[in-house]
Image 1: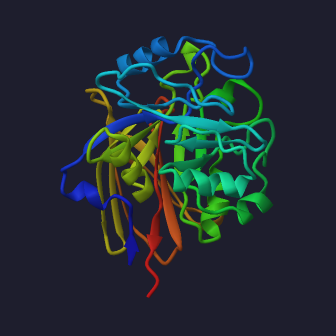
Image 2 (image 1 turned 90 degrees about the vertical axis):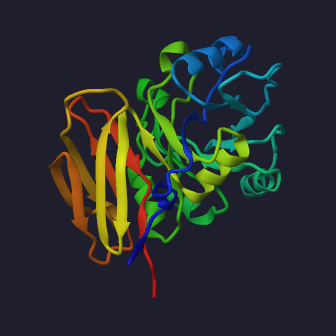
Length: 294
């Protein structure tokens, strides 16, 4: 038997929230944070269909002077002692040792995301540190800005490393916005009760979201060990074929197929996570399903 984080999809009483949790904006030092006006950045994300945006400058909180209709602007800070972390939902920079900063963020009502695990070089977030940390929500499995910098913006092997050690940590996808051409490249689609931060946090804590760079989740079901997924787009199109790749412990590929849907039977793996690729290379990463231990 398996369980998933997407049980709320069955009742259909929530709403999809498009969110970015890694944004640098406000007038800050060039090369350190965003240099673009905060209001302009927020409006750009609104126009791109985002319903939630966290402002996360390095080691400092930037106040939002007004409310913006139609988008939840979330407090946050990027913890900049290497390796970096996002402290989401807090107004204070916790200049503390890493574990204490994670705990203080949770105590203040927020959650923590480990940043770009392969920025600059593979293992920017080293295995021994991943082994020692807990209390955070998950890691950036996709960071768009790193793809124009050095290293790799993808960190699927780090995710598998964590999951293979029995830690249920979610995968996040963020722009790491600094300039306007960074906006909307990868994002989190969150199935929340509302667009408030508390409801977004609840859904994130449950893992009821997925990462996308253009592929949408249309149908999902998990009955016992039978998994069914149908992908699509956020736009109307006749294109309906995708590559589905299911991965298990240690990054082992469990099955791979092409077509409109994926239907497969799980066979005892501790976890399985699904990656879907469109004909143009756009992606969707679902949160893992986990084997229920008897």
